[in-house]
Length: 84
Ligand SMILES: [Zn+2]
Image 1 (tube, protein in one colour):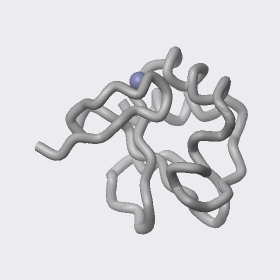
Image 2: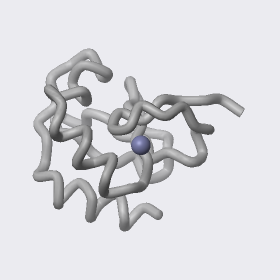
Image 3: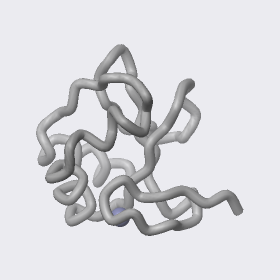
Image 4: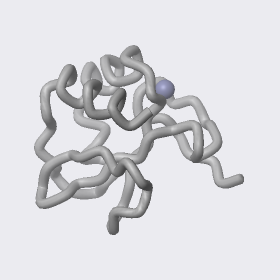
């Protein structure tokens, strides 16, 4: 199984255990089916990891190698939760 690193806690997990996020039209979006094009960034479906990622200096844009507008942490978490 391919492994990816969570952008929040930096844990390496199987891709299937993480939620994929992409920059869609310049905005960070949850890739619920894991099929959206472009670079993805991965996060555990855990509010602690979302908080951790937001405490850092925009690890999303860094991993995506492009600037992505971030929704509020709460809003992103609601989307992630809707996906799991
Ligand atoms: Zn994590």
